[in-house]
Length: 462
Image (cartoon, rainbow, N blue to C red; front, side, top):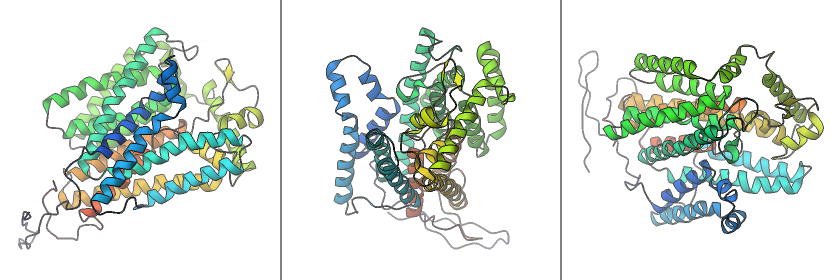
């Protein structure tokens, strides 16, 4: 198909030669392949904690399926169809194409080594690594393999926005049924890993920037109305969790996504109005909990977190190379490193409440440094990709918009990971893989370097 030629003038009014529009030649037009369908099913099942819901259903047949680990079936089917599709198109079955792939592989291998050679409970650690962490590693690899166009990334964000409604309404229903399920203070929670209100708040907060991006770029009035109706349940659920880390992640994500917006002032004004309304409508018990952010030294929960983080640093000092074993943080903290008088709500305060501290304590300094480097490189790549796409096709192009949205999502996820344990969750691995995939898409469009000064700007790619 012939390209679209266009010219522009410099500040000296000298016409530049026409430049052919860059087209996505090797990216398939068909998004909903069987491989992409099954990876979406796998993401939904992991995000909504379907395995836990099946296990808690009480149905013996469904519980048998859960014990058989058939929740990995969509991932295996996705792997088969992705391999078949790539071979059919004459491509390599799977190939490591980004620094993120190498670093993620290294982190996973260090987790396996730590489970085998460092854990006191080797059987538990190996089971934890082979189920939870291997599932996340597969998710990373499959997402990187099947997200072959900007439209597929957009569809994934729509799916996550829709699935988040299930989490939000489920948490609200549980809150209405028993608001004191999680302690002396009424808080909202869900099932499985999101039974912890902090993790629930974090997993909902990272979706809000994606919804803002989808709202600003969609042309359908119906889709805009749907997004407007979908936002309040998420915001209310985040507020009712009483999670200060989730609230901070939400604020960072909104600030980041609005920073790249054309209507920055309007967006900030709306956020301010929503924040004031939330403070006014918030229950007094949660206002007290959020007010503790101003006095960390006097807050019991903040003191407990400082103690448990200190226990994590003690683990890293005692086992600097391999840690205490993958998945063994709580066991080691409870029996060896945490003072016995650390209580919160009448129970021992054992969760690590930080992805970075948990990686450092469980897998040692090398894995921690690689995990941090993985985040740094991803932020560098997404900012560079956004700048190059905006410079070549303008800030309104699809690649630049998605890069800005992914930067906001990753910023929210990383801030949440400082105080919330995400190491065995689909975040941030899914979005890091998405950044690597978008970077590869940009490379196929010619974004390996910045636009030369004074060159013509091609039209926005399809």
